[in-house]
Amino acid sequence: MYERILDEINEGVHVIDTNGTSIVYNRKMTELESMSKEDVLGKNLLEVFQFPQGQESTLLAALRKGKSIRNVRQTYFNDKGKEITTINNTYPIKDGDCVIGAVEIANDVTKMERLIRENLLEKSGVRFTFDSIIGESEAIRDVVENAKRAARTSSSVLVVGETGTGKELFVQSIHQASLRSAGPFISQNCAALPDSLIEGLLFGTTRGAFTGAIERPGLFEQAEGGTLFLDEINSLSMPLQAKLLRALQEKSIRRIGDTKDRAINVRIIAAINEDPVEAISHQRLRKDLYYRLGVVTLFLPSLRDRKEDIMLLVDHFIRKYNQLFQMKVERVSEEVREFFLQYDWPGNVRELQHLIEGAMNLMVDETVMTMEHLPIRRNHRRTQSTKEHNLRTEWNEDIKPLKDKLKEFETAYIQHVVARHNGNVSRAAKELMISRQSLQYRLRKLGMKRGSQSPNRFA
Image (cartoon, rainbow, N blue to C red; front, side, top):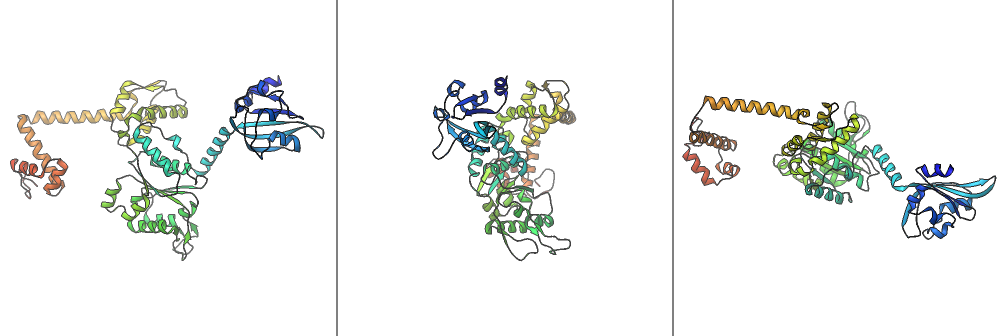
């Protein structure tokens, strides 16, 4: 009965007698050490296992010293030369004051380290690692590989991607894979607060700096030794971006109202949801700050550019909400699958996740998600129906020869594009992807002239 109980528990148990001969060796221990009971039982411990030079078996140490050894990580080798690493609790077995043996209770180090990592993640507020990123497309694999390389250093990183592409997921993964993973991870959306508040939040304040000001460290100081993530960096004002640039270059900050600088040791990762070049040209991002932040720049692909990952994400979200909602949804219908693959996903992965969650809220006992469960499909049908109705009404009221209709459309479209560029024919031609000469010819042919506001002339 004792032997059966020992074989059922999930910890390895190894017992030796006073001579170091193995007398108990349970099933879990055979799995941890890749050995059979026949290889170990009745044999001296040192005949079967080898220990690195200068290190002693925890079992033999407990036997020799008569003292317990707790939570010790031990690496050694079995008789086939395979390396084994375990976390051990080892105790002497006594008969009165006499030590008659020792018992070792071992845990798989992989399991223990996973628990430790999860505990650190929970304390730091970091929820994601690179294992959290779902996708097998070349586009996402390339970004993940570059992000892993960036995690090895403390250089600044700029993450560029549309809303919903998973920017914070990548940022947290970089932090967790870096040497700063044991340090704090502080995240701040720069668009969430006005400049008057965000400056004090970032750099801290001193007592008396302004009415009601208290002695308070900023996010830079709170993130000391770790990572500070600044999302939507382009929403900061230009003067505040200049102060941020100085902090990055000097590696020091000054609290509002203070007279001295404070050294900082923080890795900055920033994110932006638009093309940095466009943000610079529209004066939403300082060029010098972009160069300082973008030591490593990661461009996250939109979901429409990695459609081969859509069904992997769908399966992942179905499993997630099955567990959360206690449901048993197995898959999506073929019609839903085709819709997902054809849809443009302007909200990217976040939109897909919310769509799956919303659909599963409308399901009861069904195991297959159909089009009737998708809120987006209903809106899509109403929009399409309205467009078709308006188009039919327009056609019925204004029946003309096709040639005349095409000329009307061409005239209206060219008017619209040239007006967008304030009459600049060169820029309009570039957007229309035709030559400047071709556009000038069409303007003359259609009777349009720059500067006129009449309906038959270009305005």
